[in-house]
Image 1 (cartoon, rainbow, N blue to C red):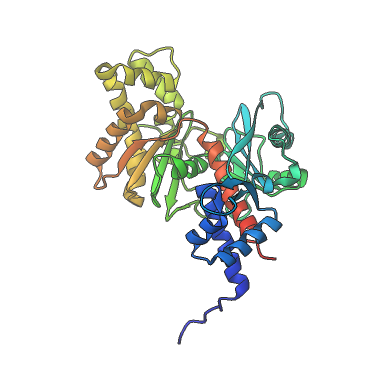
Image 2 (cartoon, rainbow, N blue to C red; image 1 turned 30 degrees about the vertical axis):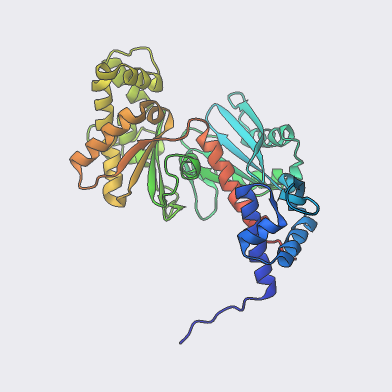
Length: 391
C-alpha cells in the first residue's frame, strides 16, 4: 500500500520558502531580493513577494543599498534583530550569569550576580533575567524563551529539577514558579549538556553528530550527543559519570546522604588538588596546578600521567558502551590540561579497551554553558518565529 502524501499547498510552500530565506539571511548577512531568489531558486516575482511578506511581519528590514549595474541601486535586507530575544542563564553555587541575545544570535546584554546572600532562587533568576534584558535595551515582553543551565538532574518528563547536589535550594516545583513569575517559557537543562551544545556549534565537535563531552572541574560530568541530539536518559541521569563505580575509590551505598560517589572521589577538584600536592604543587587550585604541570613540560609529566590514568577509567567505561568517535575534555581542569592531558587520556583509553576514540581539549575558552543556553533558546525561538511566517 502506498504511503499517503500531503499535498504541496501554496500555503505550505510559502512557509518553506520563507523559512529558507530567513535562514539564508542569518547565515550570509544582508542580501538583495534578486540574490535571495537565486539562492532559493525562486523567480524574481516570487522572491519579491516573499520579502514583502516578511517585511510586513516585522521579520526583515532594509539595511542599505547595493550599488552596481544600470538603474537604481538594489535594496539590501536582513533579519530584524529586535523581532525576538532570548535569555540564557548559567547558575552556579556562588553566582548566576545571564545574557540576552537578539534573534540573530548577537549577545547584546549581560549581567553577573552573587547568590551567596540569598535563599530565594526565584528572586535570583528574576533579577538576573530582568537586568540582562534591560542591559540589552529589550522589553521583557520580547523575550520569547529563557534557558537555565544548572548542575544536577532535570526530569525529561516534567522539565523540573529533581536533584542538584550544589544547589540545595533548587527543588521540584521551581520551574512552575519561575514561569508564573516571568510570564515567559522557561526551560531547565543540565549545565554539562549545554556545554556540549556550544561545543557542537562552535567548538571542537563542529560537524559531528556523535560525540561525548567530559567535564572535569570541581565536579565531573558527561554529556552525550547522539545523532545530533542530547541523550538525557529516562530519568535525566544520563551523563552522571561521577557515580561510576570505578577501582581506586570506595563506593558509597546511600547517595541521599550526599557522600561523594566513586569516580568523583577519583578525579573531582579535591582529588586533583591532592594529586597536585603529591607532585610539588601544594598551594595551587586544581586548574592552576594542571596548567603549571603542562608548562613544566617533562617535569609535569608524572602528574599529568596520574590524572590521565584516573580520568581514563571513566572515559573508557563510557566509550566501550557508546563507542563515540570523539571525546571532548572540558571544564576548568580539562581546559587547563589542553592537548597534553587529552593525548595522555587517548593513549590510556586505547591501552585498556578495544575502542580508540579521538580525545581532544575543548575548543571553547569562555562561558560554554551560557553560550549553550543561548543556542538552545535561539533554536527553539527561531522554530517558533520562522515557522509561523504565514498567517
